[in-house]
Length: 442
Image (cartoon, rainbow, N blue to C red; front, side):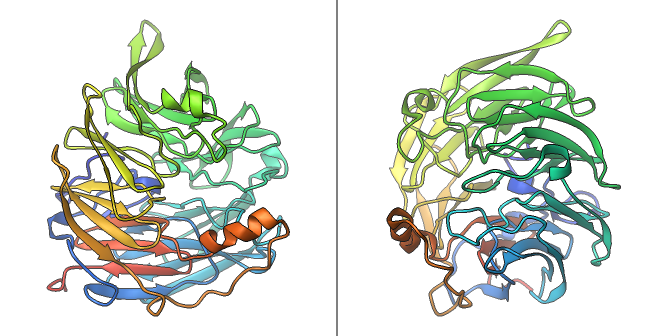
């Protein structure tokens, strides 16, 4: 139930450690009490793996295999899915498909942003063009299709960013853009659409989530003015909550017992400042007769994240913004515990595990906080330098002066996400994976 929240620290009986989807949904990370606390760009870095092209997706892991995606070419002509050996960093296989809807490769448009999903039988990669492909763990293509057959061409100035979520048999894909939008349920074994529900066109990059409520499973979407719960079998809308705004970049987070954390941001130009202020909150979903109710229990005062979703760990809820300010709240009452600035801006969602909170700084500083009501920085770790990362060519010059000014920030190496399994932390930079382990790890 707490797939997005407190990560379990004991390996399930004989089962492989896994990190199978965006934000670790469904994770069994293994004996993670031995995770590294301190490292530098040259110490406790077990391996680096250079990746083709560039990707903003996070890695997913099943046992000893790490899977990651990327895109390459001046017009994003080629999508890659790569399998890396977790222990050694060796590339086990690479498979590539042609982009069915090539567009100019730009710092301002998503680049292989959706994180794939993996289970015991397959890894499924979904790309922002709508192309979707499934491979076996050994790299055999199982099926391939374009989801725009259901919705039409993608019309998105900044691309598509939502990652799919999954149950045992089904993958759920949210495609929201300026054109016809919707939520699709895809049979993981065949790639066929089980159902599709239309959604109003909107600009949003948030990902759907599997939420467990009173013995039932729901697919919850928090996106640009509403939070909606869907029946995973039929696609029927179970409930909607519309007293929100600015919820365009973060995922709903399951806190158990029908409680869901929602994140929201004022937006680049402050267009959602009013509604976002009350939209960082905890929602309570509950049965009522044959239906459902939803209400806001408390507001995370002052929390304004951009891309990082909130998390819950050891009874505390954490929001972090792109300025690196972490806001900590009592998860039961919403009482503010502390608000403190950390070393670096964060785009990736933090991970709480054991007695630590890992914060993944945009430019590679991973701050480790003590879990608990006292703000305590245990370590600040530099994950790379310009010399330790593989070189990445600059993209074509942007056309507008505003975009050319922004290239200075967006073209720098960015820490997009992480996976945690056993004694390893796997970090994703655009063209590189970095595996960190304690110095005494095998």
